[in-house]
Image (tube, rainbow, N blue to C red):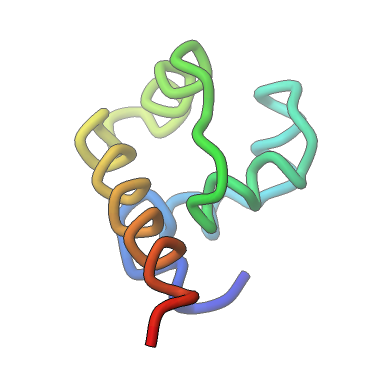
Length: 81
């Protein structure tokens, strides 16, 4: 996982937990998790709740949504000069 995606609490937590472990736990593909990390897709609400539960207090809804907002801005600005 590229370092630029780990600059948020959510990105760091996913890196530590492991993309493949997380994908198995949530019954999604590793590709889906990578899309969340890059901000090209959002987890479904039920998976967001599960992420908070799996983190055992390490993540909040705000951490997850802040990460998604940061990555969406990055993706949105990628094609601009």
